[in-house]
Length: 243
Image 1 (cartoon, rainbow, N blue to C red):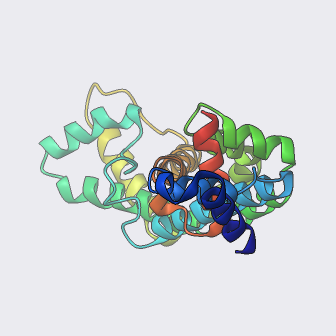
Image 2 (tube, rainbow, N blue to C red):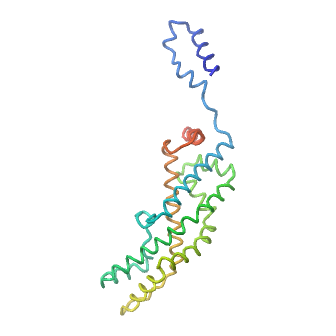
Image 3 (tube, rainbow, N blue to C red):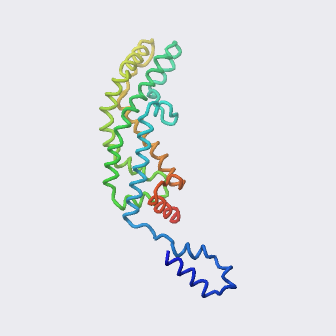
């Protein structure tokens, strides 16, 4: 505060009372109190904070009831090779069977989503400054999400598969799917279907999770309202100026 007062007083003395009214005092004060560029530690901490907020929000949304099912952008439909079968079965009046099967797939993904957070948190903790700086200053709005894909996909896939399988059994997917394929495979002159449901739902669950994280990342990059701490305001404000 003393520094600001001194600079303002100096401006008055140098310019005299008559010309002082023409001086942009606020500009002088702003220059005097301008925040220095963020340090390496601040950049790393801000990126980690932003990514932590994003993955926490995303996993919370997607693990809630209907987190996948009611989100049309990521809702899991039947595997492509089964969609012809779905059309045929609906034509036979088996709408409920098709709906139950689709609902159960999404319930399995919702159950798995909550298990993703610890894996993301571990990845964030291991992030290096160079990674954080590249993410911050990247022209790609989903640079942080792409970092996650590279750093966590293998681990997430390994973690999701048993959870998805357990969830498929628990929510009835295995039963519905067995009935679905059995009913269709009995239709004359049709090609038999039996895709790997676990692998399919695991991949779709990961796709949905990363899409949600990318949306959270975009918010904080494009809108200062979502920079909910002084550190985020400082670091992402710096990034805005650098682009």
